[in-house]
Length: 171
Image (tube, rainbow, N blue to C red; front, side):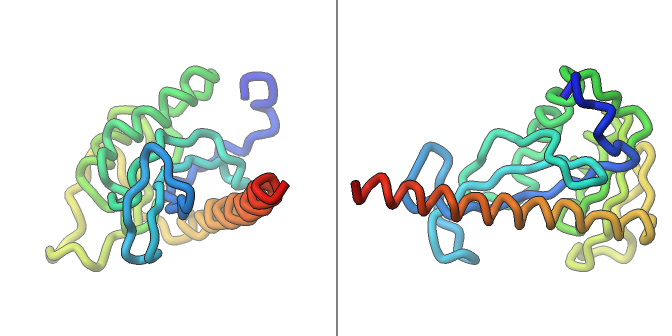
């Protein structure tokens, strides 16, 4: 990433989690009712083009995206810091599933401006209190689709790996 940083669009970052079926098992695997199978879950940070910049350590699929969010977000940011990507002042888009005090505090600690959609399921009259620099800008949030596109690419690539694994087993 250090060598190719000029190709990155760091006008904003996007954060999302991705549950992947783990049919053959693995270390961080557990049953996920929504997928009706065992899955593993990882968090991804992408640039504004959808290029994956960092991925967290996979977690068992029975955990939601906010499980251990403070330490996982730090892990994601540490990878970027190692590549000399400055986080100070970067905008971070995340969907309502990430509307939490812990993530907003973690963003503040890294100098990241959180643009997290308020979660309608949170049982309170207001969204969480402002921690550090947080905003919710609908126009900026529209750019979050790039991480969904990246997740779709990962899903398609995973299908290719599954086919290759099956052909290896049949040989």
